[in-house]
Image (cartoon, rainbow, N blue to C red):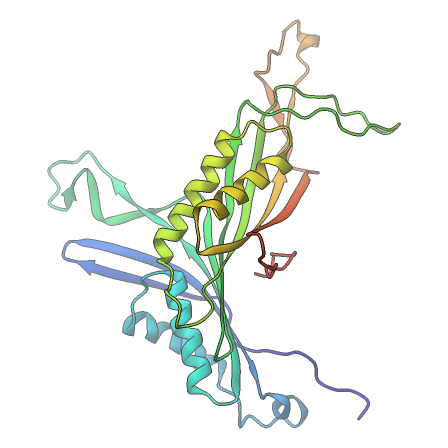
Length: 307
């Protein structure tokens, strides 16, 4: 045979599941996009078309919805762990399960209608609006013995309107960029962090609290760093997470520099004292790096687009 089968997996991608938890008149929403990928003893289905070892992808889809009912959705990480464990332990040919989840956040709609019977604490208890901030993501991989949990977020846009400089860089005959001693620093954060929880004998992290705290430390570092480069800010964001969250060993960021250039207003007889900017969406600088706990090894892929 002139060819052999290499790495392969199969599953059901982008299973949208919305779980409503009704606590009396107060409702809670978990809105997930779940993708399942399974691998193992799958040679025969590729070579001969035998489906004897194949769990239908439709079954994996049904499992996602059934588990939302049976187990609920405490967190994206916990839900992914339930799914991964089920697929690996219930089907002998399946040796590894990879669960990728995006979570879309919702917040309650505030109202001033004090006469509504649904109102409590200035918000409707069953009416929500999608948050226009980041999308939360997680990937859970399980091979029957070891776990790997990588969580993160994407599309979190942040800006410092001052306390950022950029100067002292290399210049050659093609350099036209002027040094900046007071500039806008803005970026759209894509970040991933790897937990050091790897087996069931370890104490499992509190996933929801961990996400909230990581996000808090990330934003505090961005706001509090007097930045001489976006690279410096990136490192401070990752270091703040590692130093404050013992459950995390690795952080990787991909930060596009959302450039803001001062507009030349002199042709109109106006002085632009760091007030009016042109926001350029492309091309953009792309700053990426991994920050590790001392002694830890890197596991998060350099290309996070498929994570």
